[in-house]
Image (cartoon, rainbow over all chains, first blue to last red; front, side):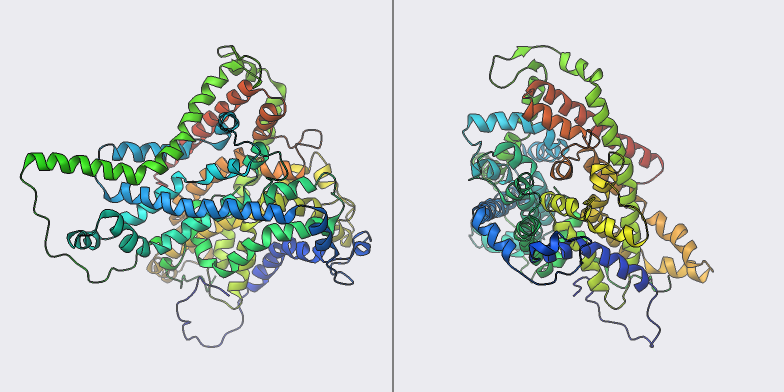
Length: 283
Length: 333
């Protein structure tokens, strides 16, 4: 399961199991409980949920919660909306941040240092400071209440440029020089030689953007009041008012919103961990 | 602690994945001959400038347009009294002065500090503890890691729904477990004295992975000779940890502390998705207050002033911790 340890297991004489299992196993179980409860409750019949004390495992499995979710809410529309937002955010991040990161790392032009410092400086500005003017700006641009409001802030980021620049700086310059002498243009060099080498950095960037844009709540909450343009997170948050007791439906919504990222995590754990340590960004 | 030897090379974890692969043998032997003609050089300079700006321009315009421009605008707004519809009134620094006498804002500040005091030390210590526990090669270690790291992908919306479910006073799992030990059911999110603790617990659930991962990377960077030497000198595992390992982790501790403080001061999402500031305003944080003032009460001017106040506090704390750690000879950045 682990992708962290790929070094070959050293040959060791048989010894008794480590005492750390007694520490780690209970912690792992506690960490797993919320998600386990989420999946179980989403397939639990209503009669089990209203029982007290409730059993940990349901007496029967049912998809009623999902059926009701899909029939009585726009969850599929919201899933589509979030997918659009995240897909555009990822593609745009990869293109714009790689180009800019490469420019700052490799090209010499007037204003390069100033431009880079200006971008890095913006990392210090908290998002709370920007919410009000950005809201006014977007409403003047007619973006409020449309999916565009959720997309535009995710087109590029200072973090992305910083990440890509650090990567490109570490690449040896001889590679591009050879290609330039062979008559390639800068753009050809960038797309044919540099980008393919940048795959590990691009994976980190893509996961960072996916996590942030998929899970974003504050900004859509402010900018989108029209339920046709809701993102998934906004949609399931709004369940909490009128449907706060329909637990199997709520948890089914939670599964729809979370499962894609859980699967992604299990599939690309190593890249996720790299992203986590690089950014620490959440929410 | 006999099996704490870091056996996984640091290069396999964390920040190091961005290291480039070794490049194939495509080394240029011919250098470009410098152009002698000054006119040519000037032309080349212009071309290079245009090329450079073409690469960085699009991203630069978007990022500066959505940060520096609104940040300046927010300052201008903070000098006004404006609801977004009627004509704005210039009030100078009245909004900032009003913050000093705003009882609700001060209450929100206290709640935020309570959360910061609960969340920051526990998240750093938990990360350190989990990293030490996970930094070993034993059976099921991959499974343990996955279980502890996967909550990192949970959104605030999903975490909020899970919190209200697990901590439900009537039927929640937590009260059921307490009942097994004969402890009466607790109010949790409905109890003003417990609600912030519940939010802290669930924040830790979702974010423990971050501090754990950065500590894990740092642990694996500690040279094993250092540990070996201490052991040969007769230090017990506990002494090795506090006298050899922990000092090596100081920069990470400073970084994690600053980062978690910034995160804690900005708490909003999980409050919105669990208590909406309640019960009795007990979980109303500064950012929640700001959001409420700006987007519920439409006090754009006052909201902007509060945002600037928050920015100033964050900046002061960051600078303070950095200076303090530099004085104690720890360089985190």
